[in-house]
Each structure stands twice: as C-alpha cells, then as structure tokens.
Length: 443
Image (cartoon, rainbow, N blue to C red; front, side, top):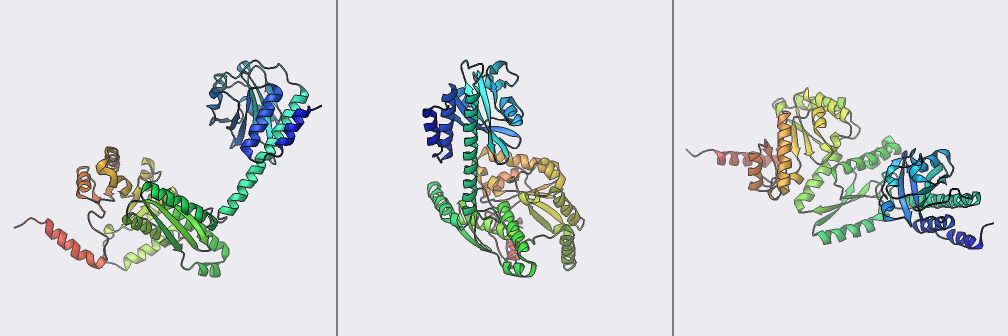
C-alpha cells in the first residue's frame, strides 16, 4: 500500500509542467523514498550518456555535470542495455564502478531506465554517499520505476513543446528564423549594437528570377534553390550575423559588429559574389565556359588570370573542389584561396587543393599593428605558404604602417583601402600610370 503522503506528492507532481521543476520534485521524492542523498537525470545521446540535471548531490559529484561517457559503462549503461533497474549497494567494489565517481565518495547507486516512445531515453540515477541498504524492497523499486517513467513522459512532452516552438519560429524549409522571430532578433541585435558601439546593418535580400524557376522547373527545384541560397549565405556571413526568411524569396539579413561602412561593403560584395555563381553547375560545364571565355579574349594571357575561392566554400567538398582547380589550371589560369584563416582550412587542405595563392583575411590584417599575436600568426601563414610554393596576398591594408609590416614579413601582394578605393575599370589605367610614374626615380 502506498502511503497517503506519497500519493499526495504524486498527485502534486502530475500538475507540474515545467521540466526542471518536475525533475526536482521527482528526484526529491525518489531520494526520500529510499533514504538516499540525491538523484540525477542522465540522457542517452549518440551512444553516449550525459548528465543533465542534479538534485541534492554534493559538489564533488555535481562538478561532473558535463561528464559524457559511453552508454555501455557503469550501472547506468547496464540498466540501459537490460532495460531494468540496476542497484549497486557497494559501488566502490562493484564491477560497474567508474573511477571518476568512486573519487566523489559515491557509496551506492540505483540506475532506473527512463522510457520514451522509442525505448529507454535516459537514466534516473539515485545516489548514496553513506552506507546504503543491502537490498531494496520490491515495492520500493516499483514505485521508483514509476517515477522514472513519469520523468520520461515529462521529458518527451518537453521535446514536443520545443519542436512546436521551433516550427512556430523557424522556417521549415531552410531552418533559419522566420518572420515571427524577426522582431525579437532585431531587438537583441539593436541592444548589442548600442552596448558595443558597433554598426548594425539591416539588409533586405530579394532573389530575382525565383518565380521563373518555380514556373519552369517546379516547386521542388525552387525549394532546392532556396536551401542552396541559405547555405551560401551561411558560408560568407559571420557567426554574429542573422538570416531571417521573410517570405517566399525574400530574406532579411542582420549584419552585426560592423566597424565602418567599409565593412558593410565588404560583406555585401561577398554576398553578391556567392549568389551570382551559378547553382548546380558541374566542373565540366564550368571549364567549358571558361575555355570559351578565354578563346574570346586571345590578347589576355591566361597566366594573368586568378580565380578566387572562398575558403569555407572550397572546403565543403574537397574532392570536387580539387578536381575543379586542377581542370582549370590545365587551361593556364591560377587559383587563390580567399579569406584564408577564417574557416577550418589546415595545412593538409592547402596541400590537397593545390591553390597557387592564399589571401589572408582582413580580420587578421586590420588589428595587426596593435597586436603582436596577429603579427606572429600572419608571419606563420606567410612562411607556411612560401614553403609550399604558394604566393600570399594580404587583405585589409588600411595604412602605411600595415603595408610596411607586411613588406618586412615578405608578403607578395596587398590590397585594401590604404592602397586604393574600389574604382571602375575605366579609371584604373589612369591610376596605374600615375602611381607607376610617381615610383620612378627622378632623372
């Protein structure tokens, strides 16, 4: 017979809807029933067990709150594998003992499988840090398993609620925030801009020709196009930026942490470049188009042509990118890896891709004059590239001090507003002649 006091607490428990509170009440009741010290909720994820919530446990134990271990270890792993409660009254001397938990002073442990629709989704672990009973009564174990099952139902319900919230606030096709999240994201971005004294840019992006894609190729092709557009935007935007799908083919971009309008121009140029590259084009078609373009300009030496690849885009498919670079290099053109240092590119990727040049990203160059760490990093990049026979261009040169430092580091080329502002091709010849003449010695 279940005591009235326990029934009252169970009745109260089923009326608790916030999960962390539900766990606290469940853990407290489980510990009281078995005169234990506390309890923890361990979730099962990707063949691992991870501690998520604690109640009533000493600091030495709760310090392991982020501990992850394989799902076949300990009495928790055994409970998950056998789908039944595993009680270990003498934990330090048990075959299930894990040294990291013995070191906390754990004396006894009860692992109860927490069930969900797909089977056991976690463990309710009850812990003793003092001598514990040699055995637990069958009725006590049944009641403890009931608490674990109630915890599983609450955990599943919370997952459904989070999923529904995501559906309400996320675009189901692309995964980015939808228009219902725009006001909240905008308020947060404005607050950060005021706090950090940085520029916030709000960009409306409308995709030209999207209706024609839907009409001529079908909605599935249109959906693939939108997903590819979002992927490319993620490739060229920073982690601090936000993409919101407003409706159909319209997106809002919140570009944060901008230091000047020049930063905004740079980001917009990257966006336009990423979205102007044809989507779905294969290497063969690209090379054929390039070959025809070169044939139409016989006076242009191919060795003077350098095609740029943004680092993060290049690394999305190493094998395909390597083939593309090799095929185009067979035509005589060269390749540069742009934004070097901003993505996960490492030495082996630079070797595999076979690029002729790297362009060190401006985020390293601009702060260089006031940072020894940035100088050492750039020096290491230049030395590494030269050792591989790769030339180096430094982006973001905004003053002569930066230019002089890069000369001393033996960078091959430089670009930035400190050298010249962007200009039409028609003005470049005049600019070049004037600066070339200025550099000639007087006679």
